[in-house]
Every structure is written in C-alpha cells, then in structure tokens.
Image (cartoon, rainbow, N blue to C red; front, side, top):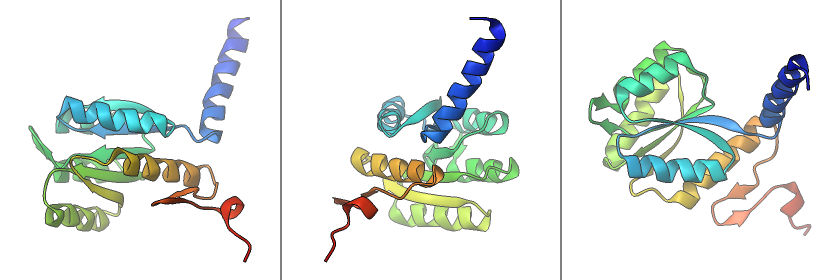
Length: 167
C-alpha cells in the first residue's frame, strides 16, 4: 500500500471511530488504582483513554489536545478540581465532565455549581469508591448521544425505541 493510501485509510479509520461512537476521555486522578479502574470502565464503554496524575498534567493536556469528556477528581495532590475546571473554561473546553471524588456530597454539589457558573456541563457526579457499572452506563449514554443515537442504558433497565413494550 502506498503512503497516500495508508494516510487516507488512517483518516477513514479515525472518521469511522467517531461514527461508531469511540470518543477520547481524559481521566484526571492522582490515585493510580482509581485511574486504572476508571480507564477500564471507559474502554469497555468505547473510549480511548488518556491519563493525568495531577492538576498540572491535566491542565496541560486539556490545553494541548481535544477530549470528548473529562473525569475529574476534586482533590489532587497539587491542587483541586476547581483549579482544573477554571483552566478548562479558560481553554474553552466544551465537552461534558464527570466528577469522581471521595469528597462529601456537599463538595460535589458545589462543583456542579462551579461548572455551571463557568458555562460547562457537569454530566454526573460519583462518590468514591466508584460504581464502575454506573460509570460505564453514563459513558455509554454519552457515546450514544454524541453519535446521534437514542440512549439505550438507564439505571436498572434497558430502554429505547426497540425495547419499549407496545401496550
């Protein structure tokens, strides 16, 4: 295969990935085990995953690359999730964000308010330890939405036009 053909085939592959709903996810968490768990659930939901172990690393990646979704721990060794959210807003990040944090529900609610004030979408907020099935459902629903497909998963049941009962 000539170089031009390989390049075109590679570009078609990237385009096909987007059509099939494969999205780029950035996981920002200073706990390596949590990053691995989140990445595993995301990969099963059809995401390519990039890891960031600190605020600084996450902010640098957000400034340099495109991500379709970001998962964010609120308490990191070199700062907090609010710092990352402000940097995301400054970088004009437009995708959804999922907070995964061991902080209290009050702190997670405050992060939703901050995201809203910055013009960003906080899709979901999960406590740690993370419910991997719930995370995978949220990510799969996001992938379906981005692909223009109906949401198939919901909490505890499968839904969508092909699963609705005719009563």
